[in-house]
Image 1 (cartoon, helix red, strand yellow):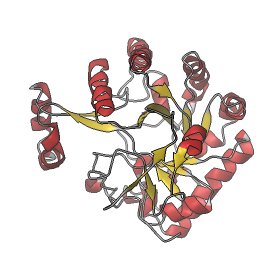
Image 2: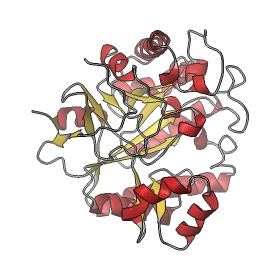
Image 3: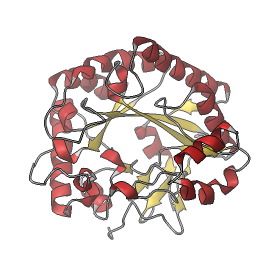
Image 4: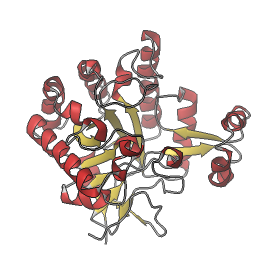
Length: 334
């Protein structure tokens, strides 16, 4: 496989086609990770795994709606006995799926300095990125008894060597691209111009990219790809445009997005004919006090109500849940 940089916006994307009957689907992904202070500098130590126990309840919640969640686990989760006890049987029985999420600062080997630049795995020397990812894959296979087939870089930090490393590791799907977002000011990737539709990386059949779904809503949404990046120095102006109903960026996540906003986002994505809507959130949000989004029991109740509302809205529009396995079986290429 020729070296292809996932973070480069494809000039002529080879969009994935799906078999007849696939229709429009949605995938629920969970960035399954340790708890840490989001306001503090990133550190190798000082994290906890208290919310692992809450994965059991969320798994049961999803099963009640016929949804197969995809848990993208990082190294502390992959090596947690409790996480293996909760997620391993569910994954082996097809009730959930396990993928990889590389947080390099807590993933051995620990040889790099902890800097903001190095928290994006794609910025590491390729051999180090490779070793970390392979150790993570091996930990999942050993402790959870399944072979992961999907990957998301922590902090969405893919890089020039990531695609080749994933191919070597037997990963069929990448979901590191957070379309409509730019992390370059932090030393990370710029996904501002990446497509929302699933597309093949390098050539069909090698590696499928499933971008996280983010849409623009409002009368100016057709101009938003040009307008929104030019307001990055003026976040208050972005908020003003959203409050005026002119243009609003809506990622499909319960973290910081209201029910009304996500329903508008879903409708835009469906009207635009996206075959696959990719939802996401961080697992520490499953208990109050771990993320800025869920601080109280009341907010946690609203979190579950958010998902109930989303599942009902999708069902009313004939949008069924899907899984990594089904996507792999349904994706077609010449």
